[in-house]
Each structure stands twice: as structure tokens, then as C-alpha cells.
Image (tube, protein in one colour):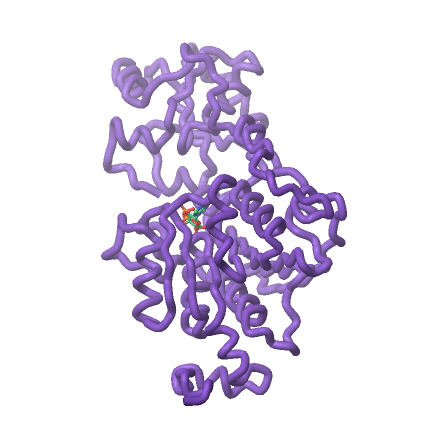
Amino acid sequence: MTTSDKLDVTRYSRQILLPQFGKKSQQQLLSKKILIIGAGGLGCPAALYLAGAGVGSLGIVDNDTVEISNLHRQIAHKESLEGKPKAESLREAIRSLNSSVQVQVILQRLTQYNVLEVIADYDIVLDCTDNVLTRYVINDACAVSRKPLVSGAAIGWDGQITVYCASNDCPCYRCIFPEPPPPHCVGSCDANGVLGPIPGIIGCLQALESIKLAACIEQAQVLIGRLLVWDGLTSKCRVFQLRTRNPNCVACGVESRKDFCDYDYASFIGCSPSVCVIPSEKRLSPREAKERIAQSNGDSSEYFCLDVRPSVQYELCHIEGFHNIPLDQLASRVTEIQQQVNQGKRILVICRRGNASQQAVALLSSWNIHPVYDIFGGIEEWRKQCDPSLPYY
Ligand SMILES: Nc1ncnc2c1ncn2[C@@H]1O[C@H](COP(=O)(O)OP(=O)(O)OP(=O)(O)O)[C@@H](O)[C@H]1O
């Protein structure tokens, strides 16, 4: 039997027919191991296209479970698998598409402590996650291990992708952003929303760049050192040249540190708004808050209830009697709140999860608006303690 007989020529015929691809590239793909970190909006399309293309082995890392709010974009998962691990759900989808692909499932959260071991066995790594800390963890490990990293991101209407390749003379993520930004500058899909096809497009591009790398296609130009930005609202796509590599970068520079696990991630977490900044006497549980509101009933209520979430979230669902002044409008609309205080009202503040409401209480207190109370845990905790009919989003 010749090598070409071992190939499932029929299955892969449409890509083998490409003159730049051919049997040689198909064999390269079959011999490669690719790791996909994150089985969400980016990871689902990336994994399915890589499986369809015939990558020999795929690893999937994810510690989360399937939720109904994932399904508009995380297209490998199914309603019937709600609550099941995403990595296992994605493995099932891969198996039903191409049973010849080997799949390893890693149901762990990737951290600075396990990352080197997890990526060690793979030729290419895809960052399909959604948070800045993990982005640094993956970047640093790939830079130190000299592994190509196909990095994608999607939020709202926008997506972007680049390829970091420490063995080439291109920058890594840490060359461009040496330190994590403050947490309040970082958006997330669950706070800001995302349209399904945006991660779909970027996940497909991640699969494409990975195939070009894995199949060693000579004529292909990979997005190494270049950033592709897709604006879904205007359908504009731009490619930027990234700045050159920082020779002193702690991750990929000449003196790159193998002990990068010691980086001070705590300083990032330490300034997280989820850390309580409000004294306990200014905080009420949803149950306590509800009881207090009920005791001082109707228009003559001694409480003015404030919901500081963005308007789009307030429209999605809100608690009866709560008025919406989004956190970013608090300063310009503070007189509305002052008027309520002048009428003898106490201010109760709620948000989605209890972070923005703490910031609002701190701001109002600094403007001498008293008394003001934070409802801890936000709408999510209110749903658990007081009203299960509030939708989860
Ligand atoms: N450190 C990590 N280790 C393993 N998986 C991770 C890590 N960080 C993020 N992920 C996974 O990456 C995926 C990213 O998916 P996506 O951006 O579509 O958002 P989501 O977290 O599933 O959904 P939503 O933001 O709507 O709650 C998630 O499944 C998440 O569990």
C-alpha cells in the first residue's frame, strides 16, 4: 500500500484538489496535533473546521458547561446537552463529523500552573477563550515553549485574529501589552453581548490560519505579526502590521522566564471591582432589601430603588419599582437622586452581579448622598432569594 492509499482521498478530495494543497498537505494535517483552548463561540467553529479538514488529533480544554444562552453562537452544542461539559459536547460533535480524528478532552481550567504541561504535546495552540488573564497565561506558555499561537477574540460586532510565532521574529501578546489592563477596561460577551456570526467568522479564520500552518503550505501567507480586525456592523475588514518584537520581553525575549507562573496575577485580581469596597452597614441582602421595601409601601415608600445596569439590560428584565440610571450616567443625573434624598428617601442600589452597584454606592457617598445601600449579589442574587421568575441572562 502506498502512502496515498492510507489517505481517505474521497473525504478530503475537495481540498486535495487545490494545487497549493494536494496530498502532501493532507498528510501533514493528519500528522499534526492541535490544541483548542475554550469550547465556546470561537472554539466550536474552529474545532469543527479543523476536524472536517482532517487534522490528526485535537485537544479541547474547557471547564464550563453548556448553557442555553451559549447556543446562538456556540454551534457545536445542543439544547439536549444543557448542563453538560462543553468540551465533551464538542467532542461528540467532532466525532459525528469525522470519527477518524483523535480527540482529547481536558475538563480543567487552564491556569499558569497547568498550562505548560497541557500544551506540551501539541504542535499548534488556539486561544479561543474570553478573558484577559487566560490570554496572558496562554501567550506566556506558548512564547516560552516556542509554539505557534492562533489567537482570536470576538465581542459585540467586532472580532480580531492574529498569529504569534515566537520562533519567527514577530511580537508576542506581552511584547504589545506588557501588563494586563485594569479590569474595568475589559469587556465580556456576557456583559456587552455578541452577535453569533462574529465569533463564527473569527473561529473559522483561526481554523484557516491553523490549517495553513499545520499543512505547511508554502505559498500561504499566515497572519504572523499582523492583526486582522473585522467590523461586523460596517462589514469592514482591516489588517494591521503589529509592532516589532520586544527583545526584553519577559515571555518571548532573549531572557524569557520559564518561571512566569510567578507573575503577579494577584495585582490584577486585587483591583477587581468584585472585591468589596463598601462597609457592611451599607450593604443589604436582596431578601432584606425586599422586606424593607415591602414595609414602606407604595408611593410613600421611604426608599428610592435604583438600578445602575446599562439600559439594554434593564429593558431585558427589571424588578418592579426600580428606576434605571446606568452607572455611566450617574454623575450627569445625580440631581435626580439628590431630589429623592431631599424628600427624605433612602437610596437602594442594584446592578447585575453586585459590582457596579458597589461602585455607584461609593460614588454617591463621595458626593455626600446619604443614606445609600448596596444590594449585594445584584439581580442574579435577587432571582435566587426573592424571585425565580426573573430571567437569567
Ligand atoms: N482559563 C480557561 N480554561 C479553560 N477554559 C476557559 C478558560 N477561560 C475561558 N475558557 C472557556 O472559553 C470559552 C469562551 O467562550 P465564549 O467566549 O463564547 O463565552 P462563554 O463564557 O461560554 O459565554 P458567556 O460569556 O455568554 O457566559 C468558555 O467556554 C470558557 O469556559
